[in-house]
Length: 451
Image (cartoon, rainbow, N blue to C red; front, side):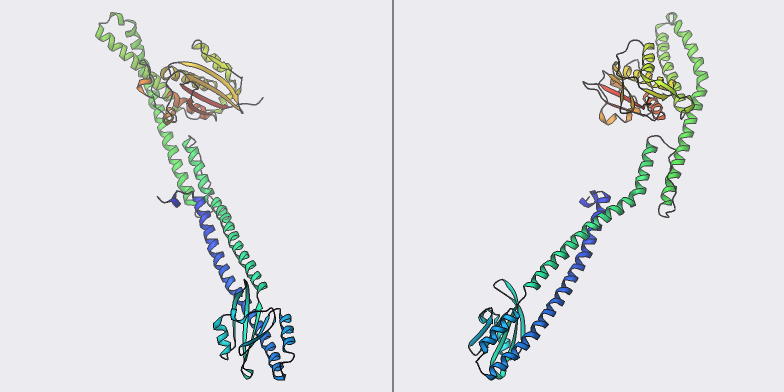
């Protein structure tokens, strides 16, 4: 797997938008640079050639009249064009304006002009870019050269180059922002699917995606909704089947329990072998009865909200603990909640039974109020729940490690599943964490009613 594939999709989209914007802006910047610099240089060269041609005629006319006044003319021309004006006559040379040694000019340029052909060339003298224009004066056996500085043009080129580079970088940044915006809007339907799938995973099988008019999203929404509908129907059938089977088992189970009660009362009259068989059968029947009761509880489905009432969580927990003997109850607050009292009592009982079966007893039962949530904490003295198993303990028929269970355990692994289901039906949440000092801490949070 390469590095690019490990990057988030939004980052990859931003990078591609930024790269494409940079390439396009860079190509436009290069084209603009070549066109604009070529045009400006061409204009400057044509202007310099025209001016040098006019000045060369003045010098030629002055030489025809005589050398007198040539120095003043050269000085005046040099001051007028702010450049160096050279007249090379044989081996001698005359200059006006800025003094420039003709030997510093490119040899090929001077040879071309001396050969009788006009020429111009850009070069650098003393770190200053200049344009040299050479015109032959064949009738006088002389050469006229005019050197013009290109400082302003060079500054313009520098400014233009920085402007184009900045424009390309800004375009790349704008492309990244555009890519982020496009990715955010393009991934919005995916986020909705993810949220809906997460709700379905938490047990809300009634979640559906809205079918919009976007033809690209309609198949996705319809496929998800069809899958969720089929899953909901399948779960409803399974739940109904479990409820029907459990209900049908109650009658023969009651008969067997009554018969077992008679045998158990007369077990002293039985020989050792049958007596042991009766004890084993009694244990399995009690476990069977508990499983049937739990299956019936699970199969009841969503809770009827009409049975909800205002409940003091601390008082409810205290009432449950009184029936089970003294427990280390730690009441920090008396939060009020809207709940089904029967199912909430079942939550407390199942958590206490789980602590006794798997956690070597309850060491603390805390009632707190935290940030709008009524919180119940059940701490045990067991070995704790490994981090990898903390989500699975609330699944159905999850009984933990056999080494951590009581030898008389008659549970079937539905107690914590019922806790999770009842808490979820109350719009709450349940999880297990590590208790400070060792052991497990089972936590239930329910929405608190503000006074």
